[in-house]
Length: 165
Image 1 (tube, one colour):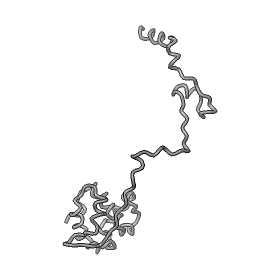
Image 2: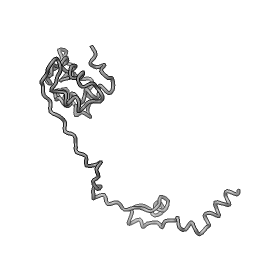
Image 3: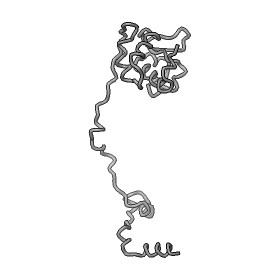
Image 4: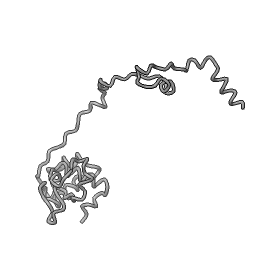
């Protein structure tokens, strides 16, 4: 009962007038005035202007490195920049050796069974999950950057297991 009396006394005090916000006209905000009063005052935002540039929003975009089919000592050395670029934490040199074993550094390779494609022999069953890498068909797996990006997706899910012997 005391709590109820305090609440009534609180509502009735003149200091509360300071916290009340006048409702804005429906024409200005497009919102019913009673809704505005419940939510507080509206703030006009000009959506036609882009936000001001800050250091965090103007960082230069990373450029995807070029692929080269060069190899040395059973390692696709020409793929190391791309492997580093897409690395989800893998050992880049190990993946360059796996790439040599899988495709001999040739992006246009298809397995003898016809199910795996490209540098890291990505199985076609994974294609539906690889849209974030720009892969929508088997032919996309022949693109070195898309193939290595796809391998990074698989690596995040299963580590080196997809390339285990």
